[in-house]
Image (cartoon, rainbow, N blue to C red):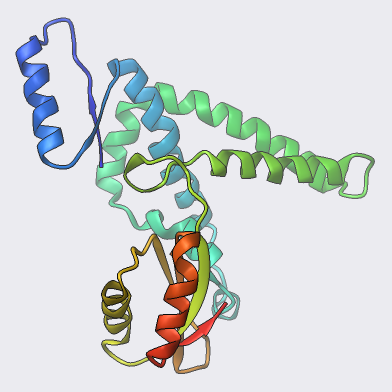
Length: 224
């Protein structure tokens, strides 16, 4: 977990060292920033995602049930943090409003650009504009650090079919641990109308072959 130490003019070197030692003892990854740099950073990497997630989820309030039944992991991923506590976020957003507003100005420009493009999607350059938007998102997403602030890594994913009965996910995770492979990411999806779930497993490329082989040998149905 990242810890940021924002030493002020009145912070003593002893207090800063004490805070840094505490963070390290608790397994934190320590950075030092000014308070202004910290607030600007979290406005982008923390507060903006909350706002965008809440805005998307708010569009679902009157959505018919048959439309919601079509929802997949994409919608779940985007709206997961929309379940956050409103009271907490009122305080956070109010306290860091100036930095967040500057970022939202840029988002507004991008949205207006996309709206203009989609109003005439067959116009010259429209498809290029859409592709550029997605490509810019690819570039930004690739810069997101891995676990514990590590550099981004490429993982390999595969799917394990899991019976929709109590204890199956726990058994799967236990057996992955017994095989000795570190799980980098896990996503769960229930197959609509079927008594089976889909567990998307992500691991380092060097470990995927052994893990697939071992899970298959233990009776799990693996879909690569």
